[in-house]
Length: 210
Image 1 (cartoon, rainbow, N blue to C red):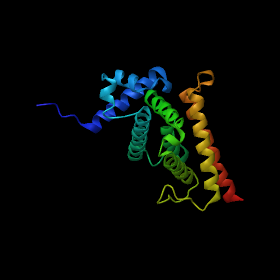
Image 2 (image 1 turned 45 degrees about the vertical axis):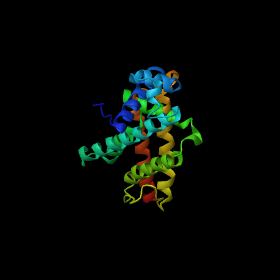
Image 3 (image 1 turned 180 degrees about the horizontal axis):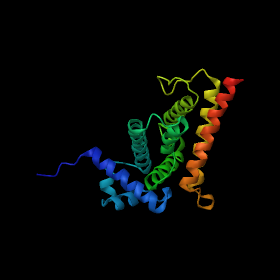
Image 4 (image 1 turned 90 degrees about the vertical axis):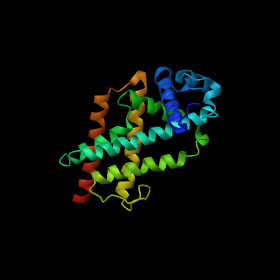
């Protein structure tokens, strides 16, 4: 009998091969041929699962998002509720930083998909999901109740302003960690992020006191 191939499992294996190509050679080395070779397949066999490089990148990005969500859920179950709020929020925010080899590969996949622009049909949805997460993190720092809908805008202007600032700060910090000429080491990035979160928390206290 011919071997039964799990279609989704093979697609995930190809996404893993794509990440290995990115780690070794960067996002611009990604092609149908290079990913197929890394996965031990022919380019023709890979095209049974992905017709184009763009489809492959978008699937890898979707899988990366699932992994981030899974990591956040795992942290939710294990975090000590007695930790200071800044530390609790920081450990969630760390999931968006390229602090290890896997997260560096995921970030490079983000870069490659971002270069697709309108070629990624979910680009607007991805942005809304990210902003929703930052609203939750900033809301926790400010002692605001969690939103039922992560994409719902909170009426508090402080939260909207600092959600935007945190989103920009984390993205910029991640880029600095990836650029060889100004590479920020993981421990430095963690310290900077915690300092920024502490500043956000202090602005809320000052606003309430004033």
